[in-house]
Image (tube, rainbow, N blue to C red; front, side, top):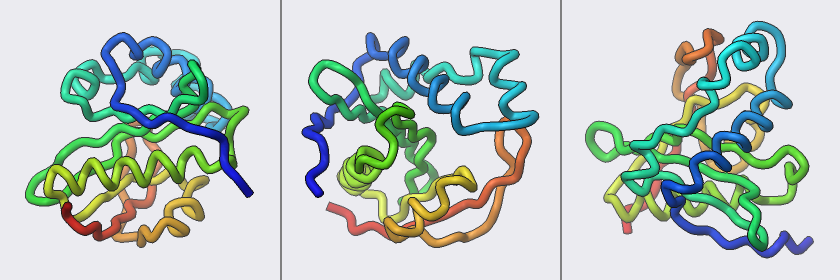
Amino acid sequence: RAGMKLDIRIAHPDDRLNLSALKRRASLVGETGDVLQSLLEDPALTDIDEELLANNEVIVAEHGETIVGFISLAAQDGNDAEIADMFVEPSQWRKGIGRELMFAAEREAAAWGATRLHVVGNPNALAFYTALGFTPVGEQRTQLGPVAPVLAKTIAPR
């Protein structure tokens, strides 16, 4: 089936409020229990890091004039890049936006010379990451407490 027409671009600093609001909406739909409680009590937890925006490390997907998802990348030691955030507007889930963002992130990381991409995956998203070729390599405690799987994928440098 044909996906929606998406424009993929590097985020601008003035996208920050829109991105933080999208992250918050997606997080509140996707979380429960203690994590949800933390998010409700501290809106700053869903703020987008200005440094990531300043360093051109956030990629957005737009449909028309509306940002429908974003992914952020951070270079790590050696040839490793980490996916820091990936959020899609809840009303647009399961339409291929996350997949397009992931491909864009892979291209960007490869352009930096990265040969490996890793992500601390939300357990709800494991099937998504596995379908895109990620494999579990361990686990890590997240900022909000729960332990989450760490997945990695080898990518070819450009």
